[in-house]
Length: 128
Image (cartoon, rainbow, N blue to C red; front, side, top):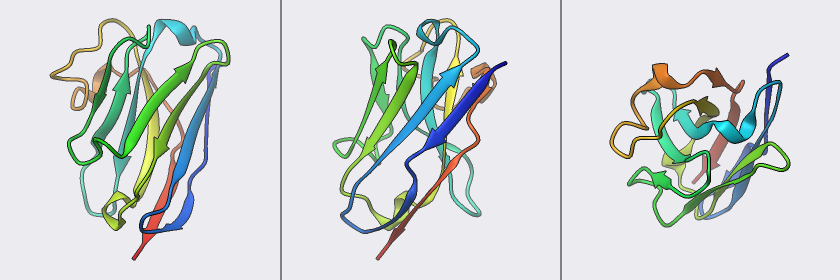
């Protein structure tokens, strides 16, 4: 059975940090590219970051560059998103998602249909 379990969300003040995790079972973790997406109330879903199946390529939205870091541990079937210097604009529900094939540097963030599996989401709230 395919399972994706997200954790690590919560309420923090601006400037604080959180680390999101997504633990996977039921499919070949190391064969998939991984993205983190978020959706805030009243706004469309947006890509935050992505990492290739090998871990050799990473991508970030301009709004989080220098603050967020994506990483994966294939031995533990887990992907992380370290979020530092959080801002109120980061408030959203965050989702991990898994995509087969090739991770494209131009389209990773908007071709949602290419992501086969999605986590349940974890709430991140940043207060000012």
